[in-house]
Image 1 (spheres, rainbow, N blue to C red):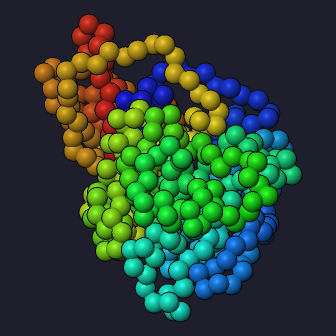
Image 2 (cartoon, rainbow, N blue to C red; image 1 turned 180 degrees about the horizontal axis):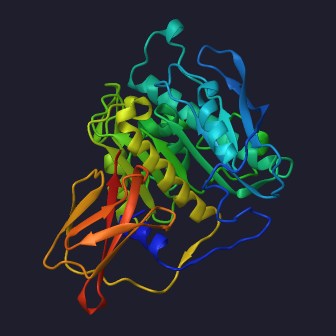
Image 3 (spheres, one colour; image 1 turned 120 degrees about the vertical axis):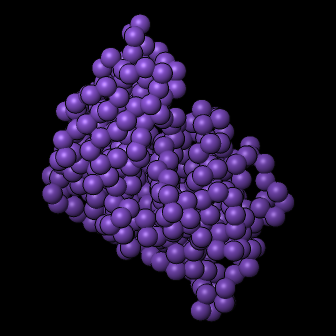
Length: 401
């Protein structure tokens, strides 16, 4: 989503489609409202592995305990591991996290390359296993929709996401369709694996594999031409110095050329697809999710990403009120600790600082200097400045403690 669109969602009057059916009470999906999570193992499909064995494909379904809502949003997640390692269990923390927020979460298996048997794959091998993974994920989405009534899932509110190779799988799943241009080598790989829907569960083909949004954690897409107007929004986090899945355009693990988050999001903007990218300066492939120095970016992703998905689930709409924007201003430093300076033609008449849920944060203005209490949490905030003639400007402020 364009930054201006995110801010308009926050600062404008919002209409919330509430009700017991979807649980949209201004708290669910934004905050952890459940303490316990139930996990159920389900077989969603079956297919042939890369060494010729028939394998069952499983998902672990995470549900909040004590939840009475009848139509819940769902999130399908895929693990990382360069398509040669990993399993669904490494997503347990994410599964529990989102389930406690009210989602039904499916952490899935997908087929990977047997590196200890076949050695490391070449580019065609990576493409083949990536297509297999996409077919598996589409089967998992269709299966989830086929059992929606049993698990109180709203089949129109299924999101998808993943980490690294899992994010690549999710992105291809969400954006590649029949009308997209496909070079012959890609078309051949798809045809050899049962077509775009794959062949991991043909009994669910009457259900759609379309999704409502994408959570991209250090992923990429094979071609920007697969991004079309009207397709699902994307929330991403990616290190700018990632040397495995390149932030811009480059070869993933030195094998297959992909388009990383740094070029995906400008393309999404040109297509007017809602998007949000948390770019981590100097961050690598996995350190951005585990090292304390990057915690502010993780916190920002959690707050802004949950807000964006909640807007989709709860059908929030922006009022017709518009905020005229004055001449460009500069707000610095970034990240900030306890103040920012506004550099522009004139000092604003007044300012307000809000968090990503729209709540006003106590702040004090002294000319071009805006200060706030030291206890404010790290994350992304929105600074609205009122100038003469009732004109306004809005800027993102990143606060790091």
